[in-house]
Length: 388
Image (cartoon, rainbow, N blue to C red):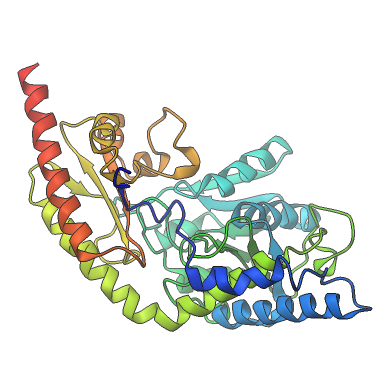
């Protein structure tokens, strides 16, 4: 059997930690009850497991368990937050502010709302990927009902100044939503200190199972109203109907528990590996770092490479390393990354970009092996271009 490529695409998804799988397995077979079945032991077991996971996730972001609503993932959570707020607060205003570099799971719902008559302001970013807080404040209107700014960018890893954004939203009495899919378990999140009213989360970016996420919805100071987007059995306080997927929820809770136990040490370890790889790649002329050099996820490295076609580079590295040139959710499109375009990159430079997502299981040996291999491949492709 041939050796599998080294995995450096942890922003797309992470492998499930074996400890998470072990926690989940009994809830597929032995403890298979429906947590909504409150009249017998099987339901009680499932309900207790869901309650424990809900408490773990709530503690991770400093909210109450009742404020956690389980969803199928961050995409659903983002849609529920944006469309649910738009519908619930329609009579108060039809203006929403977001950012050009948001994930498609935020941008697409916003574009859908535009077809219904809402006005959406898409804030630009500076060359380092950060928003300008003054521009944010200047775009707030009396009819603005929501600001949606992600915690950590899924392509360039940039961390937006959430506390300052929350302060501005509080000043103008506007709801603040953030997509925390890439950030949960990697950096400390505190919805109280950051004045966040809605926060979207997912498990599969933090070594948990796919198909499970959550939306934090504030219940006091203020109590956030939200219109359900799924109707049915009335689960999750009627906000998100559907039978709760107990094994996935258990896995989500366990993944968060493990991530918080290791958050400081793992962040430092990944940062050192990232800097090691970055130094190697940036030693080449015409290789540029994308995004803020320090205000970013520890495991993220995104570079643009002059004189090399990104698709050709990925093809040359196929079978050696698994990585991407942008968001996994838009990898089938032929368009250049909207995130890199927002940074001011030309189409050509945006196409010649690579996103490295380091993770819990990335080793020093893998980084050294890949770093040298990529440098050699870039030089070889450049030489072939010159000769042609």
